[in-house]
Amino acid sequence: MTADAIAMDGKVAIITGGAGGIGEATARLLTARGARVALADIAVARATALAAQLPGAIAVPLDLADEASIQAMVGQVVAHFGRLDVLHNNAALLGPEVARNDGDVERMDTDLWDRTYAVNVRGTMMACRAALPALRESRGCIVNTVSNLALQGHLIQAAYSSSKAAVIQLTRAIAASHGRAGVRCNAVAPGMTMTPALREAFPPALRQLVEDETLRDRLGEPEDIAEAVAFLASDAARNITGQVLVCDGGSASHVPGLAGFRAFLGEEPA
Image 1 (cartoon, rainbow, N blue to C red):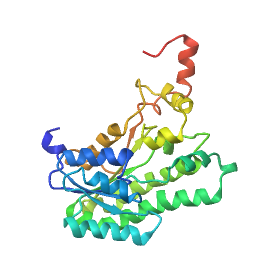
Image 2 (tube, rainbow, N blue to C red):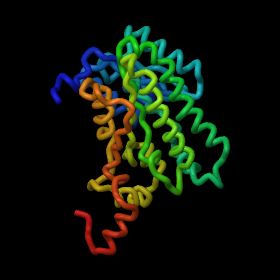
Image 3 (cartoon, rainbow, N blue to C red):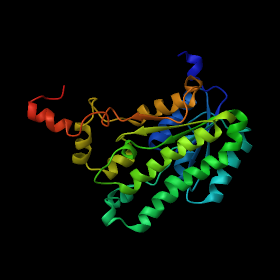
Image 4 (cartoon, one colour):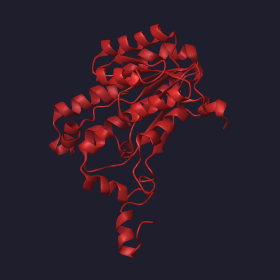
């Protein structure tokens, strides 16, 4: 892979949820590689402050639960830059309060379920739909942020994990239906990633349970996920579409209870 293949010179990218966490890290990396980015976020003040730090970047208000907001966001970006090459659907309903209340189905609040699907699935679909005409013109691509929880069962986050599983299937559907028009569509599936929001939502003891099952010596950082997004958005990934790139430090790649086996066998993590 050459430097030219991963360069983003002249390309325009929308990053939803771009004001912080994985979105911010991706915006910084794509800008460093030559892209002009639009930070689309419901947190407009934070997006505006970040855009001021990035050459050529703009902030755009976005409410993924509102179809008119999504259409206006894409229209504003295309009008400003004259094109669109990358849509990174990164925003999701995953604040501390949501994470604390998203448990198992028996105790699930129906309103929380509906709000999660309205943002994570319906909102992502509408963003793709609004962006596809411009992406066909540029032969661009979509990169969706999903989760390794979309590929595994868990005791918690039934709404979030199942909504992200739906986005995986949406990713495949768009790849199949628009590939011959030159549009690629892939997904990145992070594991637990040390964003500020995650630190607030999940106590250290819970984070340690995940870290114990990670094959690396630490949990992922937003910059780790940004590298995967930037790769899939680049020409280096030109023959990759309809795929899910799991970026979870290997936690989903081994038998359940690996940490417990380590303790039983007396093997201390390196």
